[in-house]
Length: 316
Image 1 (cartoon, rainbow, N blue to C red):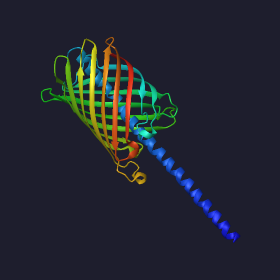
Image 2 (image 1 turned 30 degrees about the vertical axis):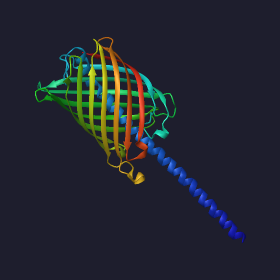
Image 3 (image 1 turned 45 degrees about the vertical axis):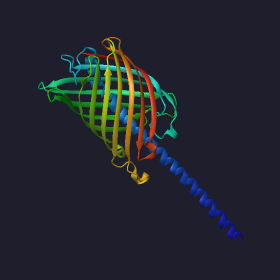
Image 4 (image 1 turned 135 degrees about the vertical axis):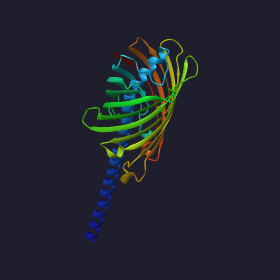
């Protein structure tokens, strides 16, 4: 009888130990998956920041009364830039809302680029951007990125549309530079600029992109439809409103663990006001709302973001 009692105690202890171990494993897996979702979002933000160089050229053209699909300024092929911003977000990790906590952030970026023309028909350029975002909360995903981009594009159909192709390679670091992940992207974009009135312009665009990473689970295809309204209410002022939808399909986002084929559907709207202080300095304020639905529950989220930024650029 004593032996039987001892066996029961040992059996109960084994069940408890297995339960604790399983719980810890699930928690660890969930944490790893959440971290991977956040890293993928940081890739996208770094790529978006890299695209800003050409937009800056377009904005300058609009302010000077020369709107176009893309304006490449003669004899100003080199550009250097720096930007500082600060703001607030309700979801710094871009993951499941129940895991999100509000945070304030500060961000810095420096960039350099060259833009030129090939055979008087194609625009081409290369750029490099180094950036960093720091959150006020220690558990928020502060990060650093370095990304290089090359593009080629041209106007088609008598200048009515602009088609471009680009390729990027970057490295994403955590806030302490302890961990790094390389990522790569290629994409094709078509856009146009429509003049609604002397001060109002409409810019729709379509984008197809492919992204790879050293973390193979991040490999995906993305398709984006976007539109933007640009209003120049007064000299040196621009007001923007934008909306976009992105469908993203992952090759294999930890399907051996999740048993789900990850597909994201992201809706984003926002507005911004900018003021050209001098030819080289711009200040802006922006607000954005993002809603992402997904077949994988951890990557579903909502986020409200708002911030102020100051940008300096020099062309020569």
